[in-house]
Length: 262
Image 1 (cartoon, rainbow, N blue to C red):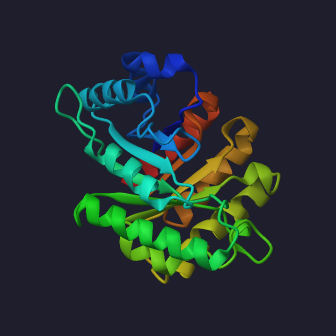
Image 2 (cartoon, rainbow, N blue to C red; image 1 turned 90 degrees about the vertical axis):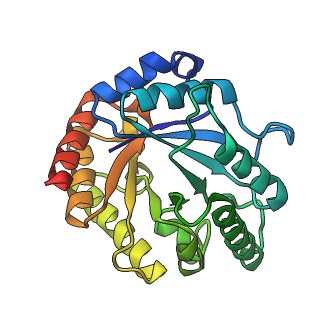
């Protein structure tokens, strides 16, 4: 059960680490996914709000939550992308804490050539794995299934080529942009989970499905996301993002988490 925080969220959520983590814990969240940077930042900014991130990590660990950092690489300057990933992986808090995992948000289309884009992200992913080490949890945040079809954002997405570098895939299954109604949302979510595993040629690949956008779903649609996640055997689920999530979504997530634990 996850919650998402990005660098564009309210400064209050970043500056009040204790309050933010207390709110997440009260909602039953076990893992906070927090953006460390993206390619749009100045080259000398490797980790955005590093001090605030460190406080969030310490506050989360004190309450038993894990923190996974995520970075959106542009793939045009993979050397800088790697430096930013390295800076996040090497961040150490005042209490000696570190990120519990790290994920690449793989969706940039700055590189127009699909073969070049595939080569860049595959190489970067291998380098991040080398930096992190074999036992460190890494995730790949990937586009939804329609975006990786012919005519989409990233056709011929290299699922199989990326699979050896990552422990889990997190599809951005944002049904709010694709369909309406509980039945449509259910089918769309199941399709995304299955497509990732089929395309990665890994039928048991751990998948954490990101449903959303949180403030664009009806209560029935939110429940459909979680029902689909459970029946398709996703290992985790969340809505994007924490700040926009509503009580009915937290209830649905809690029910999903309870069912998965059983």
